Image (cartoon, rainbow over all chains, first blue to last red; front, side, top):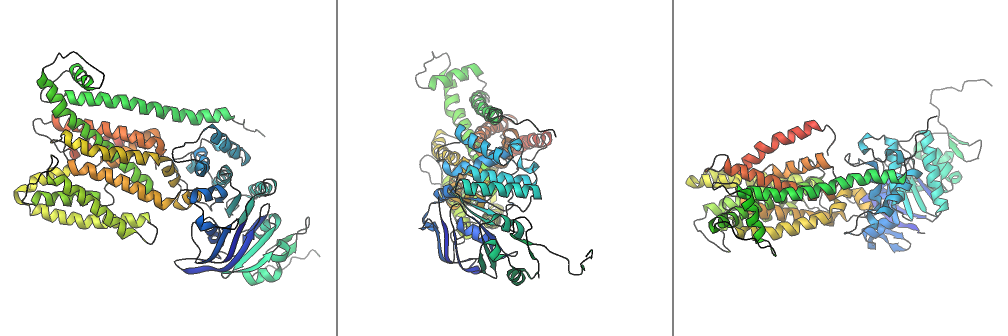
Length: 267
Length: 360
């Protein structure tokens, strides 16, 4: 179990801040979603938490330990990342890509053994990618690769998982499958999960807490009902009067309508 | 609905493992082939010595093996003092260039990378040309000033490229390649100018630049061997991490690889083995780029197999190329760089056509 924390963090590239004064906390068993417009810095938060970029100011803590002080291999045993549609080397098979998740657990002179193979195989079964095991990754679709990357992060056996748009390339059936899987992991194995999400409806359905970021700052924070409101959506996205209540579970739902479409009356 | 049958654990591991087993057998097979090629290359030459005699002379030299001497001692001298050091040096250089090429290609994730990409060749050439033009003939450790200056030139130019490309704490590979190409062009033009104005020394310089093993001695083998052995061993130790680097640097970091440290270690090791090789035998082209690709085409891209297989294939290829270089127009020798391209290119193009799959 591990707690992720950002204290008054500013993040950016070449000292140009993209995000300022960000404070957030993700606890075990909680699925925290980051939402916000394109280019608002959702991926930047994930890069900072996995120490790919270092903060301009402020502190990033893992269980109250400064992330900068944790050696990279140790960090990769604690925090795993599902990146957003990366290019994968076409010469490797799906199984080999998933097996790379074992890397942080292996010493310099070690190689994967039967235990690592079965961990990788189990993760592929869980994500329904086991039938692709011996296929080369350049033959796979975007959705299949997305599931493969989730399998890889499971193989990493970390205590926290960061996901960057995990549903971006998936059809609606797969979207639900993948998020159900992540949600189950989060609650059953008590993992700390932070996901950057594009789809507000999925964010509302699956996340325990949401962070809405806009114009370099946290615009709103809280439960989906608190964050996804008409006012917030209008201020951040400019779309008016589009938040409704889900007819089954009462969570907020965003429904868009084209500007010049008049309501068609069957009233 | 027709649900496909779920493969079992055993099926998967057998598919994955059989691929690994094939490559382990290939390493063993190539090792045996390498020994055979060494024996063949030492037996062929201006004085023909039967293969069996060669084998017996070589075996006799191994510790704990004693074979009754049925050959003239002059024959043994030809084998052990003239031909064997040359064959061994060719093998070492072939192995080093192929390994360095595979390392650079993997590290830069660029199929066009070769051992000379970041200025090693031009630096070595400049050093060597200066050595040729210096009025002194200075000898130490049994060899001339040219290898020493070539090695210094190679190392200085690579370090310069490294310092030019470094930004803050990171080393962006694209910047490194561009800095290498630009500095290489600068040094290359200085070399061209010096060659043009070198007068009667021009022939020797050009012959050096195209590469030759004609003056190889044991003293050179003993100098090149430690560099190549240590450098290659270091690279092979990091082979699994090099696989992870094939993702991208961000993912490699997130999978626990200290990317910046790995880049420096691998660059240093690959540069050292290249510099040590070219300083004695000249900048032999083609081997470093083609051997790793040929190995990839046949055995796949896993660096844990790619690197050892490149070592063996590079050594075998270079020994055979050197053999051709000295017998085809005997007693005149052809520069080895000519042979590596003439013999290697058609074979590589054949492989490329036969296996139309993605190799990089």
